[in-house]
Length: 120
Image (cartoon, rainbow, N blue to C red):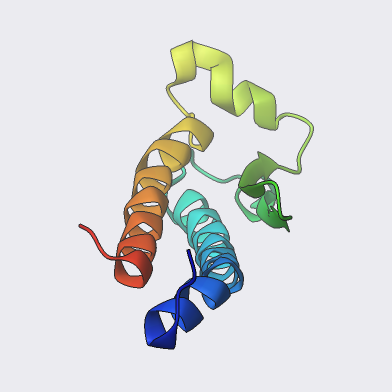
């Protein structure tokens, strides 16, 4: 089967367009997650190191066989793990950030794909 016209052109360019838009979406939510974690962290700063030590990184690995989009949110201070687990996670921010910002990321990614390929 051969596609012609604008539908064929759109389908031919779809993988690279989808990769581009999903990469930008991943980058945006990585930065947004870091900001969320820094502003919503429930602990009281004594030195400011823990809050300023929250970070994020993103990657987009795309090939003909697969696409992988990843956001990491992390502590840069050695005691960051204790802020996450001590007192049954009372001061945890990483999991909360992943849950809240992750849902926003997937909603936006689905909207991007629906807009490109149709659907809801």
